[in-house]
Image (tube, rainbow, N blue to C red; front, top):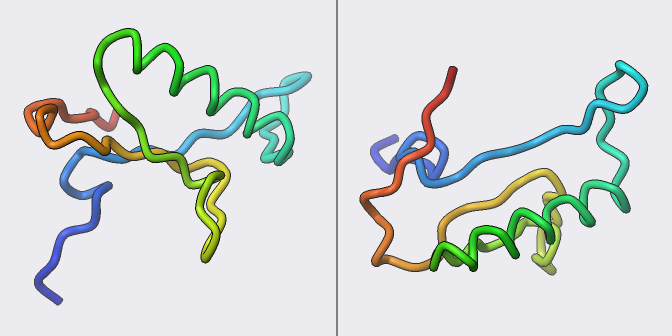
Length: 78
């Protein structure tokens, strides 16, 4: 294994929702939140590829930076 994943490179992230104090992966709500995140990112000239838009393997909580001009952007894990 030699190729790093987008998560390992720091250019992808996954989310979950907190609803009434509990973790949720409700697909319609996740999709709504992911589109909001994508809209906010676009305002900062960052293009995100959303897993909820994929057709082969739909990954609702996943997003990754699509445009190469932002390779310097890295998500930090806490």
